[in-house]
Image 1: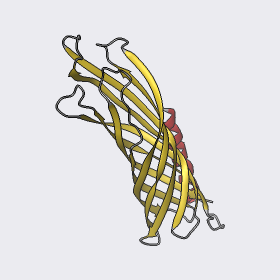
Image 2 (image 1 turned 90 degrees about the vertical axis):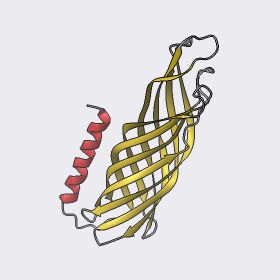
Image 3 (image 1 turned 120 degrees about the horizontal axis):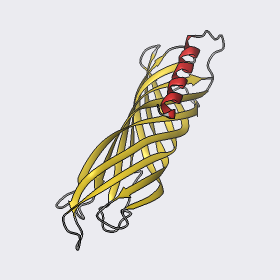
Image 4 (image 1 turned 45 degrees about the vertical axis):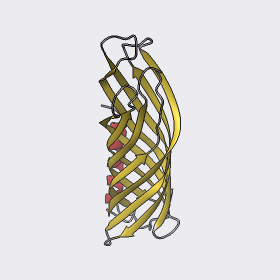
Amino acid sequence: MRLSTVLCAAGFTCFASVAMAKDPNPPGKFFVGVDAGTLRAKASMSPQYFQPQDVRQNDDATAYKVRAGFQFMRYLAVEGGYADLGTFDLENVPYDCPPGVPGTCTYDINSNTKGYFMNVVGTWPITDKLLANGRAGFIRVKNVKRERAPDIAPADSHASLNSTGAVWGLGLAYRMSPHVDAELSWTYYKGYWNDNGLFTQTPRFDLESSQLFALGMRYRF
């Protein structure tokens, strides 16, 4: 079992225990939270060898984020945190070989993305217990990529890139207690990876966007 899965499960258990406990102190303006779920990533390879158009691929991964924030107005807060956006894997993608290489060439890639984010969060109460949330901000990530093209020497190459992208999302939260909220959320990450390829002969790889569907808990101090 992955360490991140164990930590997320422990965090949810801790939050649930706090939610059931009675606390006479009213919640303050500071909060912490944890979210975990499925990330749907979309990538494309350029038409350099994928004629006549780009080849686009999707991949799913487990992702999580931890966050802390401050409620500076009744309906507005600012939050920041750390996100592990999982891995994107492609295997045996065929493309037209470069000159001098006979047959059909294939291309493999593994891409792992982690980083720090900052959001402004707007909240609108639907009922006393049900809340609608909207988020917008940015994320600064480090993407570690491994490319493999067995038809071209050297067959393997590794690289990392730091870049910045946009973040926005929506959520629906349920107030379990004055201090604890449970939230279902959708978060969209855009434009945080763009690469010309580690092999000059192989296609350009762009991790265009990702969507995170997550279940989260928030505790207000």
